[in-house]
Figure 1 (spheres, one colour):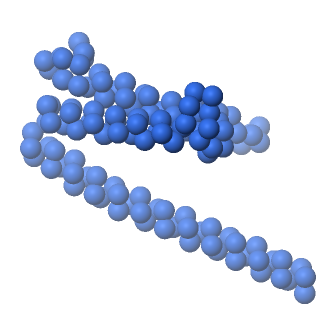
Figure 2 (figure 1 turned 60 degrees about the vertical axis):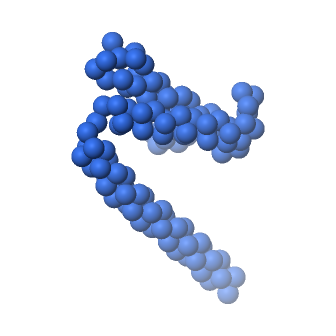
Length: 128
């Protein structure tokens, strides 16, 4: 059941596998505030603080390949399991989510600028 050539849900097992492989490369870091430290639970990219050189190879290249695999598996599952209407619903949801991500990203940038300006103001005040 759920094998790649499954008659009921073709591609679902492969999609799950590809998502898991992407998680091997990307971070799933848990902040342990009580202990005051970061503990890596998964994610080679986070383990080396965003660097791409790793004993298992170039993580940027691996991330690109795994992202492509995930996208391909999602497209396969959608094409072989969903109706045209359901695929359109996914496309609309993706656009909506991308807009939200952009909004969050811009918000994060604004917060970083505010924090830098506040830090600069404190430094000027101390030096005055």
